[in-house]
Each structure stands twice: as C-alpha cells, then as structure tokens.
Amino acid sequence: MRILGKDTPNVLSLYTTLVLSAEKRAIEDKSERNLIFARVLGYALLYPLSSEAQTYLESKLAFLNRYSDDAVKLREAYQLGEVYLKDFISIFKNARGRTSCTSDDSPPTFYDNDKQTQEKMKDSHINPRDHLSTKEAALVRDDFRCMVTRRVDVESLEHHKTESRHRELGTDSQCCYIFPELLGNAAARGPNAKLWDILEAFGYGDICKELSAETAGSNIHRLENIMTLDPTICGLFDKQKLWFEDIRNEEHCYKVCLARHVPRLGIPETVRFENHANYAYPLPSPRYLQIHAHCCRIAHLSGGAQYLDSRLRDIEETHVLSTDGSSSDVLDYALNRVIV
Image (tube, rainbow, N blue to C red; front, side):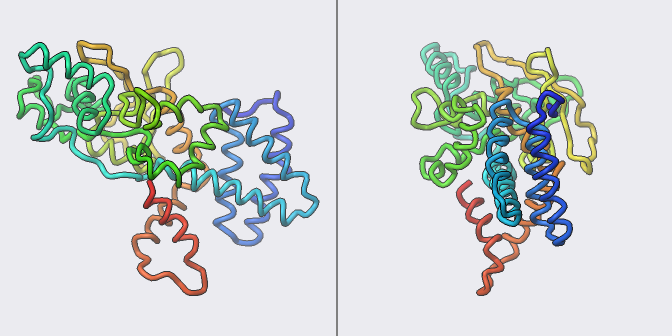
C-alpha cells in the first residue's frame, strides 16, 4: 500500500483543490453518487496502483483544473471517478460464477502410468488453453487443496488423486480466476476495451498481452491467473471482500485481508503460495493479485463497494426500465455485468 509523500506537491495540491472541492460540492448537493465518485478518485490518487497510474491521474486532474467553469470542472472529475469505479474496479466484483475444480470427464491425470500420456499432460498443464485443463493443472500445483485453508478437495479424494491426512477437513474446491474468465472471450474484449486501456495507461501493457487470447502461448487460463480455493474463500474473493496484499521481501507470501465487516472465522492472517507439483508450474501472479487488491482497497475506502452492491441489487430487482430515464444508471451497470 502506497500513499503520496512530500515529494509529490503537485499531486497533493490537485487533491486538496480539486478532489476535496468535488467532495464538498457533492455533500452540499446531497449527491451520494457524486460523493463516492470523488472519493474513488481521491483514494486512487492517494494510494496509486503504480507510478504510471499516479502520473496518469495527475495529468488528467491537471487538465481538468484548467477549466475556468467550476461546474464543468467538477462534473468532469465525477465522470473520471465513475469510469475508475465502473470500468476498472467493478470488473473484479462478482463477475462470474464458479465451478468445481474436478469433474467426471476430466482428462487423464499424472497418475496415469502411460509415459506418453504423462508428457502430453505435462505440456497441457504448464500451458493450459481451456477451463478444463486449467482446473486440472491448478489442482496438481496446489496439492489438491485450497491455497488458503488447505482443506482437501473431496472429489480428488474420490478419484484417488491424493490421499487424506490425519484429521484433515474436506471441501469442494473452486477454480478461481483473478482476472475474470470471460475476459478471455474475443466478444468480451471489445466492450471492455476501457479496462485494457486503463491497464495500458497504468503501465501494465504486458499483462494485457499475457491475458490476450490472440497472443501465442498466453491467455486468460494461464496458471498465473488461477487459484484453487474453498467455496467460502472464493466467494469472498469474488465479491471483493477478501484480497491478498504481498508481504515485502517474502516471495509469494501475502496478508489475507478482509473487508471490515467480514468475520475471519478461521481464515489465516497470512499465506504462502507454493508449487506442489513435480514440474515448474507458475504460481498466481503477484502483479495480478496486486491489481485485484488495489481495486478492493479503493472500493472499500471510498464507499464504492456499497455503491456497486446497490447497483447489483437494482439490476436483480429492476424488470422494467423507467420511461423518464431514471433507470439509465442501472441499465449502464447491467450492460457492464452482461459483458463480464
């Protein structure tokens, strides 16, 4: 987690003169929506995802600050905060359903005695190109256990892919994508272009290429984007109520962070991710997890998490749109959810 220091006077000046002014005006206007957008923008500036993200937001706000009309200036600031929330943060929130990490029609595992089959499986596991091979590879890498709770996958026990240990608890393991699985579909990448544009602007162009289905050897199913998790942990991660913050100078070690109102209930304070396979399987990418953690943190600090929850409830409860245009906000977010 980073916060601006004294070496960033221009950014701090923009925060106090523009962002705080936008918050004040939203409070005066009793606009909870604009207040959240202003706070999203403010926290994104105070806790930048990267130095490139800080530079990008600084340049955007500096441009807005040149407007002589305060109303126009504040309106544009609110819109910038909304884009950050809707087209970046919300992409990682409850974006997709989960499926069990094992299935009866799963491909042969490494326990197959045929050496040719083993070599073929080794290649497909290291470079999975679909959901099925990804699930199988993640289970092997993670020792058929949740990466956080270490509960064993019951179905893997049933298929004799692992053995139960003394007094071990079981679970129905879930295959958890850090970046949503549907972003790998070509049809989804166009409508979500703003997400990729934001990542490019923030210095993560290489991640866009890594997750692109068009890039040879790279796609959304790569093991760097996958975690094997207990359903409860997976659900919390999906809803931005749990995230992983890296522990400095300790490789693949993370603090397991929870939203303020979520009880820990046996969830460990820290975890270390390890590869348990006989091959060099990649672990979840620290950079992917960093982006997810940033979005969670900003959402909860700003009140954006509650706002998105409210929008999701509106989507579920709204069956007919109002003719006066008052439902346009709900429609906008609904279309975003359909794509992701």
